[in-house]
Amino acid sequence: MPTLREWLREEPFALGMSSGFFGFFAHTGVLGALEEEGLLPTRVAGSSAGALVTGLWAAGVSAAALGRELTRLERAEFWDPAPGAGLLRGELFRARLEALAPVEDLADCRVPVGVSVYDLLRRRVRVLDRGPLAPALHASCAVPLMFHPVVHAGGVLVDGGVRDRPGLAGLAGAPRVLYHHLASRSPWRRRGSPALAIPSRPGLVALVLEDLPRAGPFHLDAGRRAMDAAYLATHAALDAPVAGVVSVPARTSPAARRAAPWPSSTASAARPPSRPR
Image 1 (cartoon, rainbow, N blue to C red):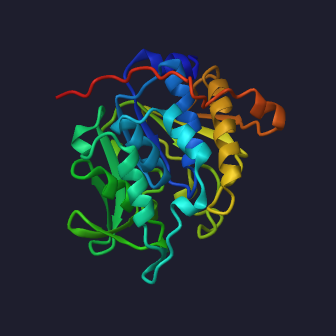
Image 2: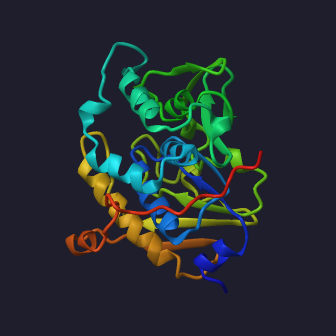
Image 3: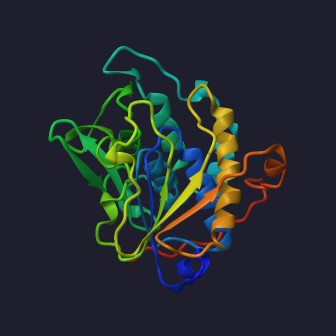
């Protein structure tokens, strides 16, 4: 049975990343480990936190650069309460996305990307793969009651995880998928909810990192610890045999954090494959 590293090197693969509140810290750690190993997806997709990380990476932001941004992140940089159908207006968040992304349109990303959003008017999931990048990522991350809905692409859009928690709607036809599943249960998900189940289909390998610290707007340091732990755990997971689900514990001790030299200002990133034109 091949290891995960061997499976990823065999043929091109797509990367899917789930929603999960402030799980973008952990997603970034996972992608950082893959980037260091030169194991780069040729197509990406995600919902909410997963859309944020895969979308920015596809736009040209290395995982190491995103990791440094998240290491410095302060709540005041995205916290803009305002009256409306949600606590936060989202303008500060949108501005950060626009400042970070090297390209403005999803169609100009270095690999194809699918962003899952939920359209309140149509009552269905939509996958955005072209058009302005920042509004699409903003919409996919617009957690109901936390952010105002986003009017974009002819709809009123909120968090893609409302109906596509795995964020895999944009990879329906992909034959080989590495999927990072955030296992933590959101407060509004009941225990045993079908949305929390790990997807299974031919050609899909799910990576589950157990016991990651749970981050939130008032617990950003937990997010930084989750990023370190996910980075280390993914490196360990690459040596595990592939059996549908690759599950490894996340190490969050002070010693483990000191062992994670990433992301540093000198971290290098492998060059991703060029997008077919």
